[in-house]
Length: 339
Length: 191
Image 1: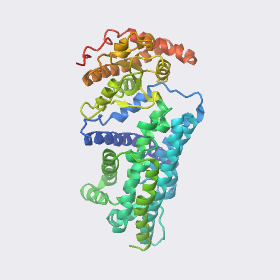
Image 2: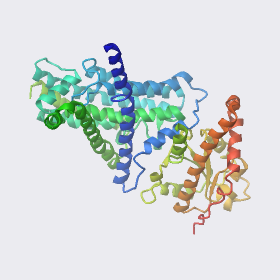
Image 3: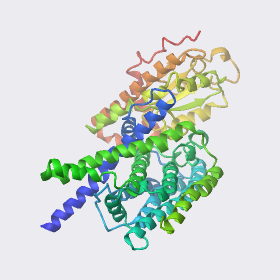
Image 4: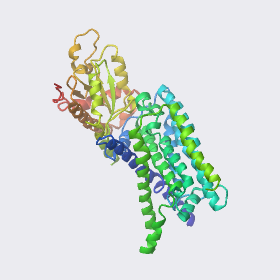
């Protein structure tokens, strides 16, 4: 009986709450908020916030064309693999004190899973046989390389800080990192972590391929690059996993640096209404998580989009390996000296 | 329910693909003007897409020169169904001042079913938005008609192998129906 209930619970995790439906709704909403905010910053009215939903369902009503020279199986399966990896990744990121699969995965798994959606786009693009996709995928590979190094350093800095405090050397478990923050306050309040926070804020637009760092997509010069040959449902799945990526990156930021932001919620609810405190707390925490994600999207995706022009690919690479890596490295050094 | 959702979304998220068939660039600039903050066509969900594969509405400008004709037809055939073809400016409709020239193959309606004509040289941004809004509605109607056609004859999926021949049919069916509303846009005159 308990096995059955556990299976049901995990199924609910995968399909509903941190899993598919939650990702779909919040990711699309974040994407819509982003488009609306960019429009408002450019003094336009902008599309309705639900616009990504319209785009998504419209694409399902369109014909799906597979180019004659494409590898059909890879071309059609790549988007699904990317989306699946993206949703699995979201399952491993704790929502404040709640984590669906605690203890199973740590930062290293998150790093690997972050790569899979990008690799799936590259695979799909390479199999489409379009020259635009070829240019796009070579740029995407450079972007991945550029973003990966500072991201690893940021994660290392966080792991060392938490590990120092717990006396375990390095702490790679995401749920432990959040537990530490619930007990001792968010990491964003630590001075030694501030450079890492800044680096992470710059990594988010790079990882999601938003404006100044979108050399791989570059609508105006290489026709959205890797997606140039995609139409209909596979394109919709790519758009979906792109918007889920917004949610994943911002909630990863929340887990790493703002993990303790909700510790007052449960205390408060225990005082008011102890019987249902845990149940209500999770709902409140989801809402707070969404608000934090929306603010992060507004600051480091929409704002940067509205005020900058696209970087060339070598400028992007140089920027990430000097400025952003430098910021993250400062944090790592400070963490190693136990500051 | 799902079908209704798709049909409704179809009229709210039109992505444009723009083909210059020998245009003087006047209409091209006006089309871009429609996307600027002043007119902001994105509030209706419009997006310029660089690839015909992702487009819903094809906007053709220019008098369709003999050199550009095969490319125009090829690009249009790459747009997935349902698609709406819009001619913009007087050139693709009549040839405008280039009419009778040895290098002109137009008007475009000789070769494909044109759904909306936006007249003017060049059309006002207001006229363009009006024409595109009409195109959105036709797009949604076409999707609904495709569902209806599938319901009536379930065998329709079979000859899909010869995609070109099949896709011609429902298009001409649909564009025959609402032909009174798809007539030349009255707002057209620019000056």
